Image 1 (spheres, rainbow, N blue to C red):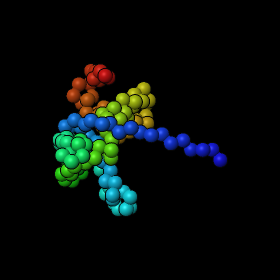
Image 2 (cartoon, rainbow, N blue to C red):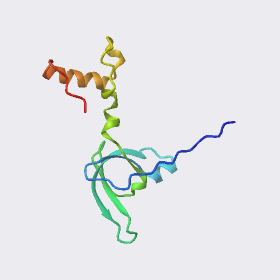
Image 3 (spheres, one colour):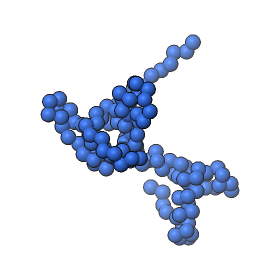
Image 4 (cartoon, one colour):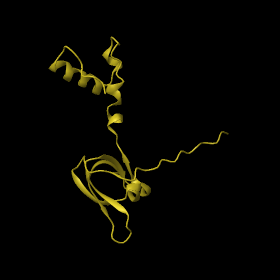
Length: 123
């Protein structure tokens, strides 16, 4: 039987106001309770008086609920490149738009509707 490799992921140690993150409520996760993982926006960072550790306050995007004192060990960044990957890799030369994700098609329609002479330059 082949041994499975485990890859450690080092969490980002510093987040900025406005960053989008994925947060896991570790207690809910280990108890098997629903609603343990959500997308949030960083509101502020602050240092805990007793431990000296930097903690974060987030706004849960799906409910606009405030979450305070979040440990960054249970946060991961949600980079724009990942959110835009389907658009950046859309098969524009394919005659069948079914090969593209709905997000890519919607983006193209929006931009072609504004100015059909050219698509915006890719970064």
